[in-house]
Amino acid sequence: MIDVALVITAVAALLFVARMLRGPALADRVISVDGFVSAIVIGVTIASVRPGSGVVESTVLVVALGGFVGTAILARFIERRGS
Amino acid sequence: MDEVLDVIGGIALVLGASFALLAGIGVHKFRDPFSRMHAAAKSPTLGLVLVTIGAALRIRTFGAIATLTLVGILQLLTSPVGTHLAARAVHLRVKVPQDGVDELERDQSPELR
Image 1 (cartoon, rainbow over the protein chains, first blue to last red):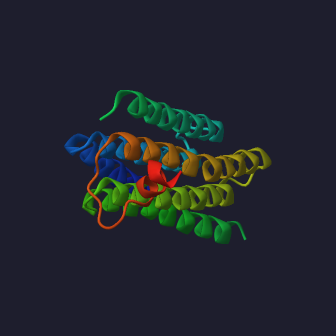
Image 2 (cartoon, rainbow over the protein chains, first blue to last red):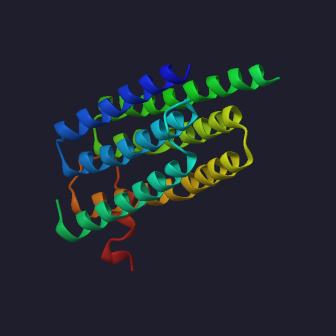
Image 3 (tube, each protein chain N blue to C red):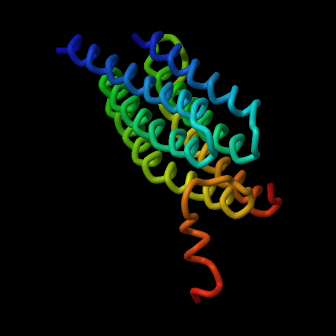
């Protein structure tokens, strides 16, 4: 069941990456980076349940915080630089 | 009892992952950036909350449950803020074709002040 969830999350992350590569606007890339980070947080949380994966729950906290800071910085970047 | 909790936790994990998949499909299929943002912002948040509940049900130690609760609350607080920042920046800087009236631009137009 854990492996099924991990595969589903991986497919979702791949869809986000596809949108990130295709664009067309910078806005789409920023949005898909945001979604991609969410998918990674979900994936790390699922991996922390899997026995023998070596991932602890504290990792999830770090990844989630890092993702928020990343989105905020990207938003600042667009506001300063323009399209 | 333990097996029941494991099964419920597993179902929650798969459901949460499916919400992430829904977001991916939405980001792929919708046609303009704001619709895509709508898909990419909401469902992963619900998905992550479901996944943390599922993980807490499966791990069942005090430290893990505390950390995962913190993660869920943190995500519920930061995800809307991050998406709002991104949406505001995109609206300010990128010309996005929209159907209907752009209400933010209308409310901020100089003749109203």
